[in-house]
Image (cartoon, rainbow, N blue to C red; front, side, top):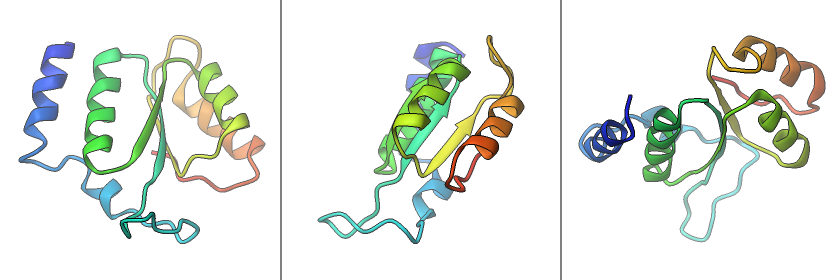
Length: 116
C-alpha cells in the first residue's frame, strides 16, 4: 500500500470507523483524562511505512496515542522503558516474526498486555 493510498484510507475512516474496537477498549487500570475519556497507549510493530501511517491515523482519530516501531528490537527496547496498553504486531518482519515477539513479551514482561 502506498502512503497516498494510506492517507486516502485514513480520510475515509472519518466515515467508516476502522478503530471501533480500540475506541471501546477501556482497561480497568486506566483513569479518565480531564475530558472524561480514556487514552490508550498503543505500540505498533509494522515494517511497512504506509501501514504504520494508516494505523496511526485511525488510532489518533479514535483519540488514542500510537507509537510505531519497524523492527522487533526497537519494540523490545521500548517496552522495557515504557508501558503500553495494547501491542499490535505484524507477522512478517525483517529481523524476526510477530510470533517470536509475542513469545518474548509473554516471557519477559511482568504485566499481561493485550496483543493483536
